[in-house]
Image 1 (cartoon, helix red, strand yellow):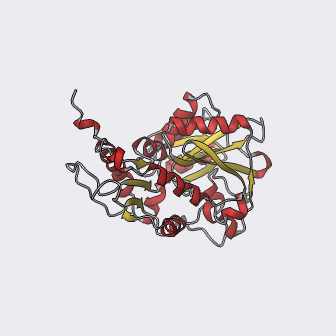
Image 2: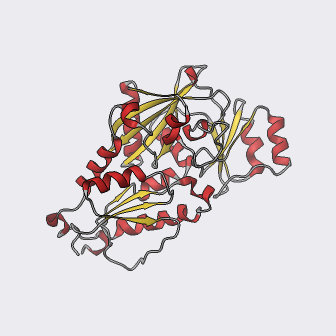
Image 3: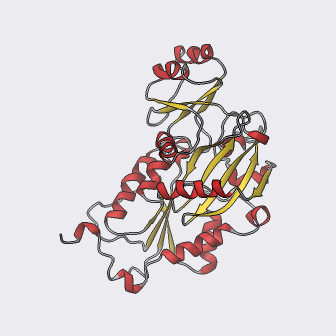
Length: 333
């Protein structure tokens, strides 16, 4: 089988989120194979992949569905694919950013972009000390979250101390967390900017319920009748959450494109808000698994899955370039 005739591998864990992607691939008659990221194996000695292209759609919220092992496994699999010369959409660098909020803050800092003030801890015993340096309210946010999981708000230092004393702080899969200032968003909404191939694709304002403290759209969508971590922004219009398409200022688009370039994200989203107190733009999340909004044609005016598959087709190896795709590890020096 030549590289040009191999199927596209769709590496994913969530059972429902990628049905529109599969439907678009089917519509075009493109050969693809579903790869179960939660129950996966690979041979590190192989020198050729059975796939022409691998699309990494692993979710950081997989641990909420009992599939946390897939998060760590993906890092090794992505590195392996890159070594043998297989194109992977959202590869090892994107995975490293997606699964580490501390790295995200470091990236914002390196790019000179604003973000909510935070400290990074690796043990609950340091939470109070970290919070003393911040303005209350604060949130404790697990390093590997996803779908808005693992965020607790504290309005007072005494309340945080009580939680620590009662052993109620869970720092998540890697026992690392942010202690971060809570920032009220101006206008009662946050912003999500979606990108594809390093460029602006569309943006949305997502209006909060006024009750949630989590700054992630997945969390603000958790309305009373739907508290499952399965629910995320992709379903927001169907759940009655107000979502509004808009075009961000040019400087925000430029900043977002710098973020995804630095993070090596082929397709993904960046979220930001405007601080109610100061009017400052604050970036707070980089999401390499950013699901497109439901009912996108009506919400943003076009089908992003069609554009995504256009991009995937352009990434497929041709017979000509397949002949010269020599893994870097085999190149003589």
